[in-house]
Image (tube, rainbow, N blue to C red; front, top):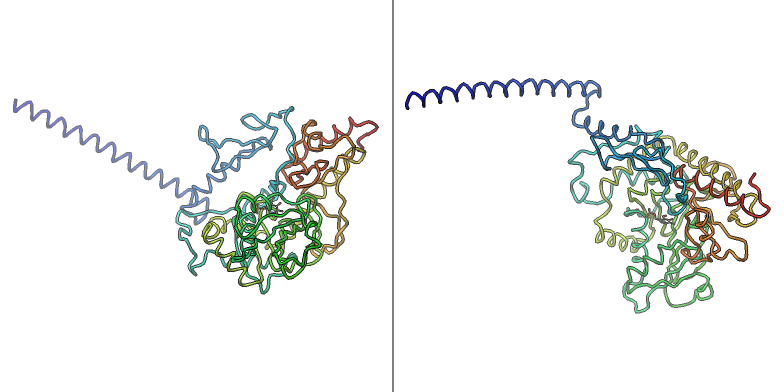
Length: 468
Ligand SMILES: Cc1ncc(COP(=O)(O)O)c(C=O)c1O
């Protein structure tokens, strides 16, 4: 018994030695291999260490071609180790090469993907690598929630473009301009009056103004529709908050304030006041002006907007709203915005605005040509504008076409377009007549190409019409 126990003991000892030797060697070999890989990576990437893997992952997603009709994203699905393609509207299949002929052209929504090719051309200068420990605090080291670097870049950008005077004005950041619009209405509404302020806008107006005011249902304000109703009532004791959208969504007009007087406060929404879309006749110098990165760089998904506010008390009330609502804008978003704006500032904004203006000009030319022989559809007319940025008089190139159906019987223009497999947004969404439909011209090339081909087909079917 004792002899067999000692034999088992010896067997176990030898076994354990073999196992230890095996794991020891593989650990050593594995480490050497891993070290070799890492040192190769470091060699390839110069002095980089921890960011190599992140960069490789980002490049692997970016390298998916998706047949030019889609995109793979870092945070998208991965199948068999490969990022999955997310296809543009009307394209399908694993590599997005499949065109879906019965699908409707999408000219709805305001997704600004027309600028995506610009960012692909500037992949290196616009990429951001974020360390796992990047700005984990609620605040920056100066105890604010706002990056001073980003603030100074924004002020510099406006001075380069000449579209806003920022001296002597406070700046606030918001989760897109959407959050700032709500903050502004709150700040301009009377805090302690029994008479709520009337919030108004000129038809056709961006639907969000009304939707927000009604949804947030504050005791301090209520939405009261079109400015035209209040034109003769500026001597009312009631406060009025007027939204002025310049250029306007949906029709691209450079609107000005309609109401004036001691009780009138104005919120200028300048989402589209950039040379992609309009001439810049002079810098905006208003008490409260709101901008957004969504239509400047096209990064609507990053949710970043900013406001310039002259009055200290209004600024403090907006500030309080933003702090209580979200404790400022995500530091990750601020980092991304900083990186993007650096690309713009590098050459004084020349490249991005030339790209944006050229793209929009070509799209307007194609749209005008497609509708040139039509008696059924017409486009908005906007006079040429002086542009201090390009130093010339230029035709405006608005983000949206405001299409009118001219035939008496075509009372619902969107229905006509929908039947021709075109999606847009009906006039009543902007509190205008349904004879109008808004078509977005700032979506991807695929969306725009399909829109044009569907319009050409629609116009060629008109009695007596021929496309050129
Ligand atoms: C006139 C106008 N203001 C504000 C916004 C909202 O922009 P953001 O993405 O900054 O919230 C839009 C979006 O389309 C818009 O058209």
